[in-house]
Image 1 (cartoon, rainbow over the protein chains, first blue to last red):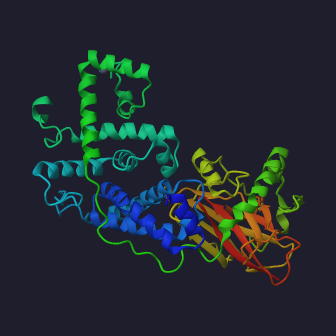
Image 2 (cartoon, chains in turn red, brown):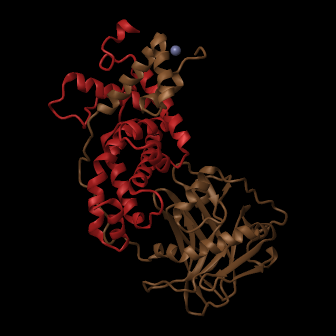
Length: 191
Length: 293
Ligand SMILES: [Zn+2]
């Protein structure tokens, strides 16, 4: 059953119609939140909060697609959590001296190679270094593969703004990864 | 960058968004310019690496609130009725009435089923126990295209765009003293606040409304420009006498220096009825209940 049909059932008060939407989108949203926050616990909080808000409001959704709307709520939740975190004295991702802790990427199973783990780490650190709007842009586009139009809905900005943010963000991402041997194996010689 | 380099096209090229001609010129440049070729290869590798990261899995089940996903009131059925209202309002806009209303502090009340529109004057002075600040200019900059673009999603009808207010989210959420009847709704996209000075009004009464919309991502605050007033209906076919009001900020009518809106309770309201004051917000609405006395 497609999103709109489920949404119609939600609008008629059918609680069971909401569960398939959760199952359909929870991992996608969790992955997005994980890339945005860099922290599994925060990412799980974002997903929980997104669906709590959606449960209250989804039946009244108008205009945007369910998917774009869920991403919009999740981006806002991630932003809120990010703001709360930046006010906390100790960032859970860093140790007391401000070094970024080497958390395993929960997206990787035990069979992941050392190189895969190093790449995941490099990506996480590079993303966290991006300004918020650019991090959101590159994550929605290249992690969740939203279309420009879906992104425009999700971020409530014009498509032109979406494209320029993606472009800026990818340039910054490439620059941030440039020194990573896991991503650019011949980084030392080439640069 | 030296002019002629194609760095600005990297992202579009990666997405396959260049036209065939543009792509051919792009490739030609990469063939001749090792700096651009290396930089594009670097960007491609970086973005590919991000895209290859496996999807993560939500570590524990999502807990849903108790009850039904549909809130107690079924206001989402309102837009069906408002398809008439949209035409009505479009007519108003075409006639320039809305502009006139904004200028002259006129409250327009229309009955949707009959299609009649009764503009009625309401002077700033007659309202309220609010301390008026005569001559206080209402700052109402043009809305950003961004906030304007949100409106149609409501399905309720934009007759005008919300006006940006130069105040913080915290200030907006602080219900002014003297407005005890209030409601707040945060749907994850926007937060709406609506408040009135009393919870019961006589038919034909003028109601001062404190209403604010806050964008949850930018925290930008705006003054809504449309409020709907109508009898609460418990049946599945909402009442035909639902009334639409286009309130206006009334010059000088302010609380704590910030503008209020004003609507008129329909004269046809009957004592004992419960009415809803509905403020459309992006993707949702805030509803405040009043009793007719
Ligand atoms: Zn070049």
